[in-house]
Amino acid sequence: MPKKNKVKFNICNVHYALQNIAEDGAVTFGTPVAMPGAVSLALDANGEPSNFYADGYAYYTISNNMGYDGDLELAMVPEQFRTEVLKEELDSNKVLVENANVETANFALLFEFDGDVRKIRHVLYNCAASRPSIESATNEDEIEVQTETLALTATPLANGYVKAKTGDDTTDAVYQNWYKTVYLPTAEEESSAEPAVQSVSAAKSTTTTAAKTTATTKEV
Image 1 (tube, helix red, strand yellow):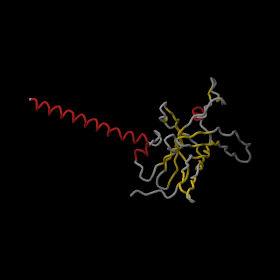
Image 2 (cartoon, helix red, strand yellow):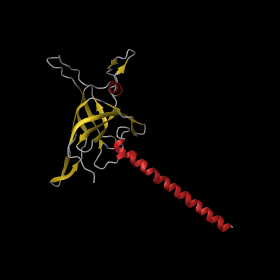
Image 3 (tube, helix red, strand yellow):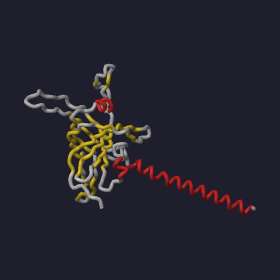
Image 4 (cartoon, helix red, strand yellow):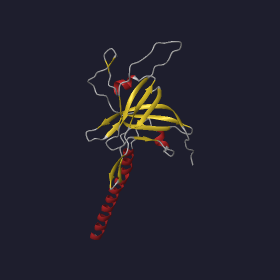
C-alpha cells in the first residue's frame, strides 16, 4: 500500500484556464497557463447547511454549498492574466488600459500543496477575480517586496461541481496531466461510455448478419 500524506505545506504551481460555455451550456476550458510567484491562498467555504423544521424537530437538512471566497496573493499578477481574465487592453504602444465597460472572464484555478509524500493537486472550476489593489511603500533600511492580491470567488458550475483534488490513489496518468488539461469528471464518464455504445452497435450488426446468413441457408 502506498504511503499517505500526513501534512501539507507551501502553495505552488498555480495555473489558470479560461472557461468557455457553448450555446448548449457545455463547459470547456482552455489550456492551463502558469501564474508564477504564488505567496499565499486563503479560501473560506461559502454557504452553510440549514434546517427545515417539522413535527417539532429538524425534519430535513438543506445542503447549501455556494463554493468559496478568499484571496490569492502573488508577487505580481501576470500581464497575461490581466489581459485574458481581468480584460485589461494592450493599446498600440503596449500600454495596459483598464476599461470599466468590459466584463471580466471566468476561469478554472489550478494549484497544489506540498505534502510529506506527494503533492496534492487541486482545481476550482468556476472562478471570478476582482482587480488587485494599487499599493506600495517607500524603501527604508531594507527593501520590502510589495505583493498583489486577487479577491477570488469560486462558485458551483451548472452541474454542481465546485472543485476536485487528487487523492491517495489517483491514477498516475491523471496526476501527471493535471496541468495539461482541466480535469472534468463528466468528460471521463462520457469517454468511458462511448466504447459501450460502440459495442452495442457492433452486437446489433453481428446479430443482423447472422440472421441474414441463416435465412440464405434456408433458402438454399
